[in-house]
Length: 61
Image 1 (cartoon, rainbow, N blue to C red):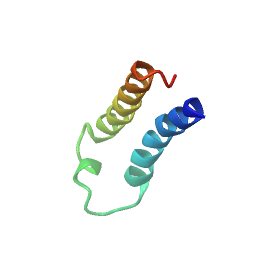
Image 2 (cartoon, rainbow, N blue to C red; image 1 turned 45 degrees about the horizontal axis):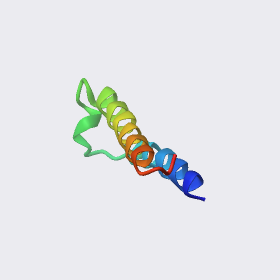
Image 3 (spheres, rainbow, N blue to C red; image 1 turned 30 degrees about the vertical axis):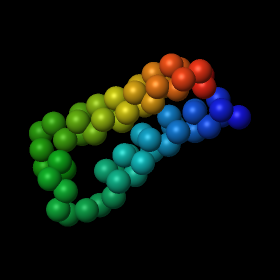
């Protein structure tokens, strides 16, 4: 059960960032930045990697 919960959290984090970033807001500053998309992808990968490392250290994975 812990393993399933850990993987669900790891997969839900990039989904959350992509969902917010994918909404068609007019006033999101990162949509006009040159590096806005790479920054969003970096945040998604970084958050998933951090969660994976944390769960592996705690013995959940």
